[in-house]
Image 1 (tube, rainbow, N blue to C red):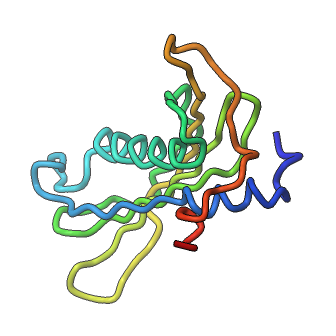
Image 2: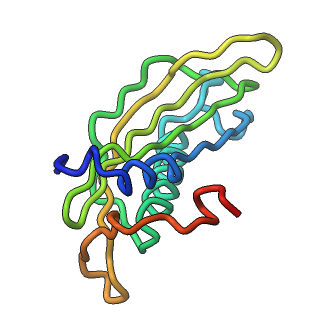
Length: 147
């Protein structure tokens, strides 16, 4: 991995595929401490990581690993969370996605990183076999904001 990090097609795909999702933490998403269930956070993180991987490659992908998930701050009910996913590296068939989860207050200007972690996805074909990640083709004008 990483010999392509300065390739303009790679960089354009990274920029285009950066994905964000905002959720409200409702009581149904919380544990007995009234904070977000860790499993729910992981589900949301996997979802946004999957979106970033697919937007980057425009291929079918599957999660193959979660790397070093760090829960830095409990997220209470009644707050926003913003999940941000970005492709940080690509191998022949795999993509590494960094996901950061930010806690944001609803009633004041406050935001801080609460959870972070890495996800690895593999591109697959119709038979669910690994295939090469197609990162080196240029983005069409409609995805570059030119139309």
